[in-house]
Length: 447
Length: 71
Image (cartoon, rainbow over all chains, first blue to last red; front, side):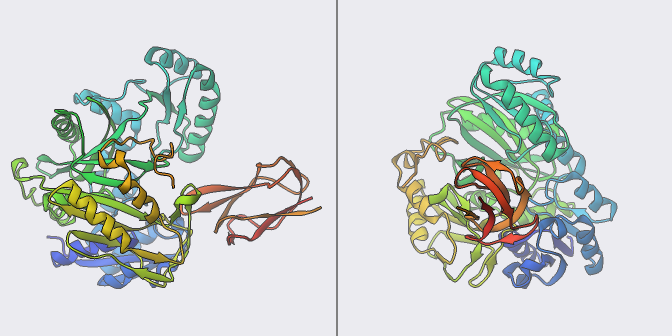
C-alpha cells in the first residue's frame, strides 16, 4: 500500500480523498492557495503546503509547484480529484516522470479519451454505439453542410480537442450552420488552440445516463451500475441518482455491457465513467471521464463500496477487491449539488462570505462539504460548496429524506441552489422519473 | 447625462471589450467579468458613448461597483 498521497485539489473532494487515505492509514498531504489558507481541507490533512496565489493557474493548475510540494513532503502518489489537472495527460505524465504514482489511468488513456474524435473512433471499434456524426474532424464548412444534410437537423457542432461544453453549438437548421461554424471554430481555437470541429446529430430531450467503471492493472474491468444525471444547467449536472428511474426495459443491461467493453478496449485502469445519451431504447456514447466523478457518492451509497479506498488500492498495484457478480445495487440514492449560485438569476455565481451555516443530518443523510461558517467563497474557483446525498430502501424514501435534508440545510451570506432543488423534488415529472437534459433551460422547475 | 455602468456580480475583470470613445448600443458588453469559472458580460444599460473605463484586466470588482461611465 502507498504510504503517502498528495491531493492536488481543494474543497469537498480534497476532504473526501483525505478521508479515504485515513481509512487505510495513508498519510495525506494537502496543497492550498492563498485564498484557501483557513479552509477545512487544509486542517484535515496530515501536512499542508502553500502552493501560490488565489488564481487557479498560480496554484491548483501550477504543475511545477505541485510536483515540488510532492518532493518536499516525500509524497509517493498524487490524487488529482476532479476538475483542475485531473484530465490533463501532461500532468499525469509529469507525475510519472517525477517518480510519482498518478492515481488514475495511464496518461496515454487520458490523452486518447480527451481527444473526442479519437475517443469516438475507439468506442466504435469496440462495438459501443456513438451518436451518428462525422468520422473525424471536418475539413471545411462545405463538408459539414454535406454531412448535416445526410444525418438530419438539428446537429451539434463540437470541438475535437474540447470538453466541458466549450465550443459546443447547437444548429437547428441548414441556414444557421455557417454562422455556427464560424463561432464554434473561433471559440475552439481560443480555448484549445485548435479550431478542428466535428458534427453529431443532436438528440433533443434525451437523458444523460452514465456508468461507473473500474479497472485494475491486470486488465480486469467491472461496472458499478448506472447514474441518472439529466438535471443540468449549462451542460453541468445539478442532481444525480442511482438507479436511473424509468429506463426502458433492457437498456440498463446494454449500457453496462457497452461501458465495460469500451473501458476494456482502451486498457482502462482505476475509476472512470462512461457517459451516454439515452432516448427511449436508443443509447449512444458521449464521452469518458478518466477520473473520479463528482457524483461518485451516489454509487457508493447503493453499492456499499468506498471508491476512493479502492482507487488507492488499485494505484498500489492490488487487484480489484470484487468480482462483477459481487457488486450489487441496493435501494436508491440521490445527490443534490449545492452550488453558490442564484437560481432566481439564471444560476449566476454568488461568491461571498458564509455568515451562517446549519447542516442537515438524519438517517440515510450524507454530506460532502468543503466549506465552513466564516469562509470566503472565492470568485476564483468552481461554485460547488457541498454535495448532499440521501439513500433509502426505495427511491421514494431517498427523495423524502432529501426533502427533509434540504429543509435542514441553511446557508446565509451567499445564495445557493437549495430552493431550486426543493422545486425539482416537488415536481411531478421528476417524481415520475420523466427527465431530460433540457428541462432546466426550458424552465420546467421555475418558481 | 453620464450614466454609470455597474457590475451586477462580484468577479475578476477578464476582458475589456470597449474603450473610451466607443459607441455602444443598449445590451452591448462593455467589459467581461469572470466569476467561479463563468464569463459574464457587463452590458451597457442604454445606448451611448463610453466616456471612461474604470477597471483593468485582472482587477477584482464587487457587485455594484462602477466599471465604466457612458456619456
